[in-house]
Length: 157
Image (cartoon, rainbow, N blue to C red; front, side):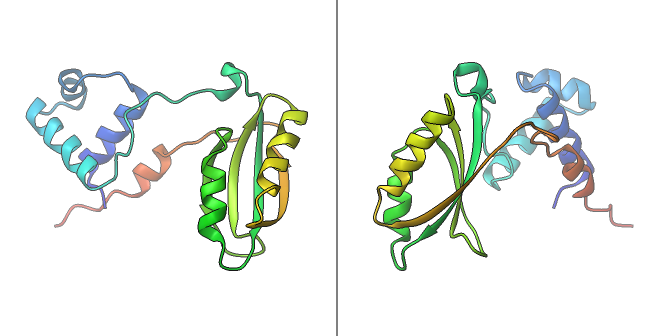
């Protein structure tokens, strides 16, 4: 759970990713030591997972974004994940429930390149079937700010 200061801290860090602790403290109206302690606490808890820049993959030559659902051969999940980890165009892989076992976020230079990536995935005996959907546009980009506001624990009376 987050308190109001944690929420404001995270929202401000997201809005100003290159901000220093001193400026962050000034914007929040709290001591620099308080900000540093909160950032360390949130990092240790696993709330803050990354301080790196977000990368626009389309700007580095990968304008195609797709989601591939994979059905995995029984008992071969580890083998499938190891294969997927070797394909640099696969950005994320999630274990899922339902028809598919894994959901992959994939980028490609072009649709023929995407087809090559899918062929590499299917070359693994651990992967039985894929179903791929190409994203045409981003309607709501990745965001957590509304969630940060909603996750605030009410102050105790």
